[in-house]
Figure 1 (cartoon, rainbow, N blue to C red):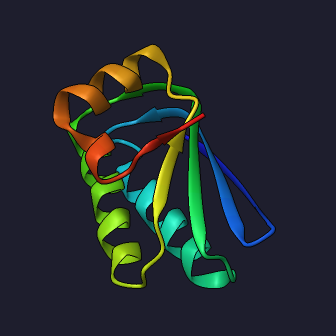
Figure 2: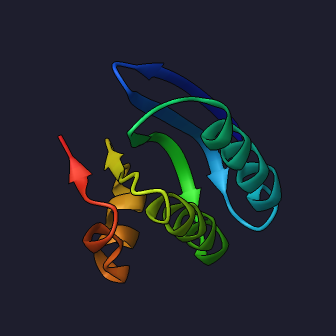
Length: 102
């Protein structure tokens, strides 16, 4: 798993590359928490265009980050989901809490 980020005009853009599963969950969780606590921003956009696989552990990581940011009134949006991620987000209803943006 590779995680890249940048902040532009108050928006943190995060690119997840690789697989978000039980093997990468701890690294992903810790890295996102560090990114989310070190910058000033008012919205997060997570780009999933390079995410090739995600399982239930990965879903848990994203939901956990959503809950942390919700407490700070910072919304999370999903951009460019792969076909695999799109299917998971639709099946689980995750778009209800982390809307897809174009």
